[in-house]
Image (cartoon, rainbow, N blue to C red; front, side, top):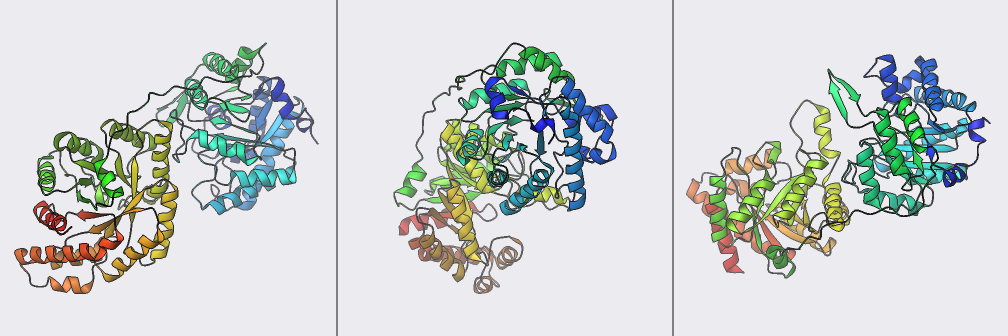
Length: 595
């Protein structure tokens, strides 16, 4: 066994002094070799002397632990080439162990995030990588740059079963607001890691520079496990397609050392950090020891809750009516506002505002919701999709909605954008409505916003409705309080709605009604709109009708559907066809008169 594994146990080391890691292998390798756009892990095989030399540079700078150059070496990144991945891992381990031996340094098997797979497959890949390292003699593991805990607890348990005294460090890539790209807040991730009993230390790496890391440390307050920080060398800049980090080593070292003295047990660097950054950190820490005690937790301004008459009416069984209006596709909202006034005059309780329906750009639903509330006083319910914005943008919108007193919303994954770019379509589903709901719920629990009532979509026209019910249950577990259903335009949809009422206790359900205005409209919905099924008898009923007669039939059919679904719902959700607010106002007024 090499000297790196004969040193005092890491647990004993970090009780006496902070453990200093190396820096960013990938960025430093690119800087030294003037290469980019190629997996640095392959350098273990192609240019091993350079990789081992970089390890040695970090060790000479003062690093007491180094990471294997294997961050992205997995079968997903390398497209199933198992033998190649195993070769990269083996060579990466051997290079790091050989470099560490004469310094008596620790070697950590470095495993980056495995994402975009079902949870079971993620755990399987982590286990494959861990088993490969365990066979090489590894006992220290770093799972870094994670945005969730998927597969990590199971993998840590597996490692501990084989090597009981193994040291497992799990590190998260968190934005300055304290959440990851999956919308998960770091406090909950750290709690999950600590409660597992298999993870020895937690921390943060990448994404943030020293100052942002300091904010994260203060945000979480006391950490139940030893804390690790490996910030970037500041924020990156891009020049001629190349990424540079400009944080000076001295600034990095002094800033990180100051945080370490607040009680951080493990420190090092991530992207852009060179041996000079690690040397500066070691110099700044000279004479210091790991501090004990609590960090100051950030204080939050208390928010004043506001009432939602619409939600209260739902809870009270008053069967309120919400009507959906599509936002305008130009910068003029006059027609939209006129329609909203007409619906308000008819007694509608809330206006729902779609978010770029059918993946076509329209006026922002959240901004329009604010105008509706301020100008009309009627409650708006904006839709929010996961498709068109990142988490920072989503949080910004939620903060604004909270300030406007808007606290009902519909969270949906969003329609794919019609494009030949496969990754663009795929990206819609990387952050789905369940994750969005959990993110919104967490913001409320943390006091960042006044808690929202988050609704989801329920497709009563799904061919395999039991799977929809299973998905709905998961949405409720993620914090959703109820569902707006797709339009009910068939006997099967009515039956599915009844089943949903029985299967989803506690869910507030708003039954979807969409007036059909012509035979052509009915056939278009049946053929081209996802999630809508129009019975042939309804389509045929419109054959040969002029506009006036078709609208009369639309009123009759809509009122009939409203009557039939009333036992299974808590409210009505009317979708306005072709901006025909007068027609919908007429239907809504008749529905309320019947109630």
